[in-house]
Image (cartoon, rainbow, N blue to C red; front, side):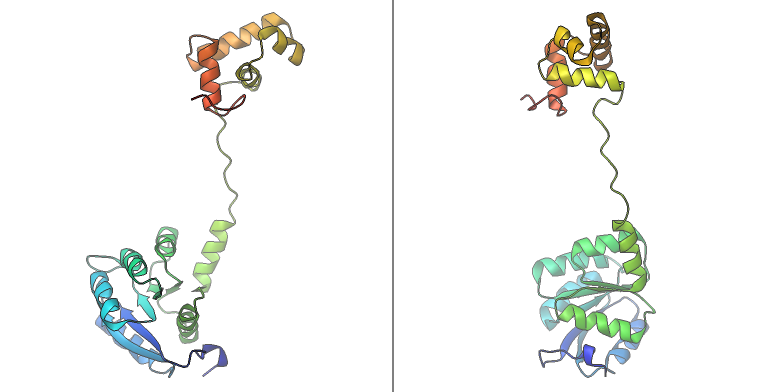
Length: 227
């Protein structure tokens, strides 16, 4: 047994197996018995059964499948974590899509591996989870890195129907500036400002300056939003 797989607590790590295929659970049980630091304390074939089994077997780690009849693995993970936050969930599934991965992580899973993962990888994940750490399979880790490495889309500007100049003028109107003052600030003719203000009113479908200011401030322009 490699040193990193030894549990520092001295007690065997209690593991609950949750999968709706008996043959897979049998193979998993056989694999885990090769590590003397692990003890399989129970099995369940459904998400609802997993929730009940956690209460009766008090495991340290649950190996949780996702696709099961009735309560699925994500919901079962959420309920187990809510009821017994000290129990670590390691998802072991065929599903590698982003939606399922992140749903399981949000539900509280402390690890996520794909079925067929090497024995050493599965054992590391169990020991890591029991120690309060999180470990994800290489494929899942790459997905998570790719997801969080995506640029955050910038928020759409308020009033996209306005031109850059119209928005600039609306900002000044919302700040309480008069048309002559806006004209001096922007270095344009007062008539130009009046035309832009008229266009702004028309595009925003407001009746007057007060309503335009209220709309603009509600959108965060020109100062504190009006209430």
